[in-house]
Image (tube, rainbow, N blue to C red):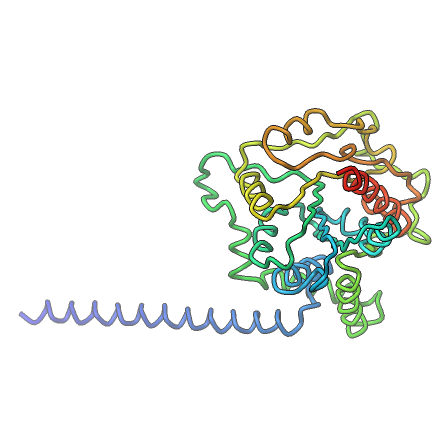
Amino acid sequence: MNQPKTNASASGNQGRKASWLVARGLAGFAVLWLIFYGMYRTFPYLTSGAEVLYLSKLRQEMSGNIFPANSHARRVLIFGDSKVMAGFIPSVFDSLATADGLNISSYNSGYPARSEFVPQLKKMAENKSNLPDILLLTRPWRPTQKGFDPFNPLPSDHEIADRIFPFRYLVRDTFTFLVAAREHGGVLNYYRESRMDEARMLHDHGYYFITERSHYPNYILPDDFHLSSDQPEMVVPRVADPASDELTDLNAIIQENHIQCYYVPEYLRVGESAAAPEVDQAFAGLLRRYTSCKLLGPDYYLYPNRMFSDPVHVNREGAKIYTESVYRLLAKQILER
């Protein structure tokens, strides 16, 4: 008659033990999370240089001021990837505008290793002081994910992981940092260099001259440099999805805030691709049908090797020429309005 009570008691003990083990595991996980998060916040420059610059730009754009307060200057913002970050110099752009009698304040929102811009623009729309009057774009918006993937049900799983575990690359980045520090005068000196790089990027309104990837004297690519992936006979046009949710979001932001939106060229090396036509008729037609953004110039410029510091990014002289080319396209549009 007592056997059922014994079984019930044993079952209850097992349940309590299992609950205790789960609670202990969760507590251990929480402690580890706090330790790694504390390291991540205490030593922000242990991460990769690209990540330092990206996160710094996001903080500045979302909660800081990227344009002068109480200024009547037209605010110009350019989005793009690291090509834009290393290629567009706001101080040069603004000086050219001043010489033409235009009151302009520009900001470089090129992100290292990233080309998306609509999610960032949506967040910036919450801080009206950082919204531009003129928006310059280089890359099309991202297409909408088609259908449902049972193996990847969350379309923004990387973003979710970044929010829950912002330190998830801390161990890898710390190891990389320690290895690289040997070529930069030691750990403390390299850490200070990373902090100075961030300060210089913020001082230059988002522009950053990428020296880390250059292995050539004076940051000039040799005239005979080429890659096996170069396709000098092929034109690389812009391709965009007119049914994308991001295009809907982009249109809503520029319409609600009365933003002038223009697509401007990127740049490639001579020999990397064939010369782009003066006007990409297909992309220009897509813009006319689906958005108020307008197309200025070709899809990309071709620059000689001497204007590059590495196979992808222009050096300082190349950046000046690219900045002036973009300015001339926009100035012509402004002065003719």
